[in-house]
Image 1 (cartoon, helix red, strand yellow):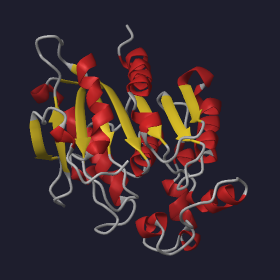
Image 2: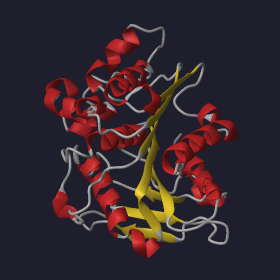
Image 3: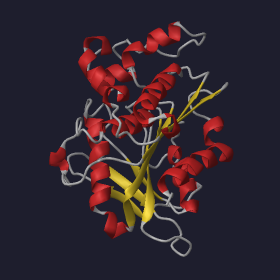
Image 4: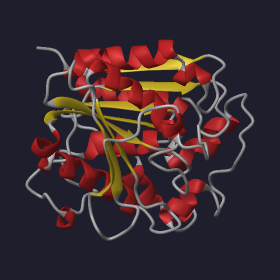
Length: 292
């Protein structure tokens, strides 16, 4: 899902680019894309795009934002955010940044004609993890640094799209051993993406790993989720998504959790980004965010 190309080569550029949502790091910036104002009534529901890249790379303007930009055609504003990567800061800096960005969006909603009460998070891989973690932990105000501004606003959202995000770091290797998939990396290794995120091997940071697990924060206030994962994902075992979906269903009900395990799909790719699948995601968001 990663690419060095800029997403804007095949899409309209942002209406507002590189806007700081905080000033501690150069990474704390976002881009705002607005729909065609002639055909859409403001305030616009918002899709927040959170890029992947193993927590150590990726950018708000790379090709990962292209599926989300399809939402412009349906009247969504799309806000693509950067956050501090693991080479700059360890967990929980990343989820702090995501929640700071959400609060910034709500505080500045009137200026950009955004609907602060209709916000969805959408990300893949590390971005899927951060989307899920922000979605489940928002209302209990854990994993949040309110000193970064707009503290009067809650960082809660109304929907989450989680594409093949990791959840329980500590059992990923075990799940691969129980499956027929040959993994491309060992997550318990000290140089795994998750170990680099936590600042030490995950086996030595079990409490931090638990805090980073979206399942740890699920309550009955969690928003509706749409989760997709490929059966041939060599990086994140698809059973992670099945476990997350099951815990969400227990807390918020079957009708609010959609899980699709895509047979033969890997870690991203055309099965996720094809027009038919993106339309399914946008249909879900329409149901959740545009219902009367």
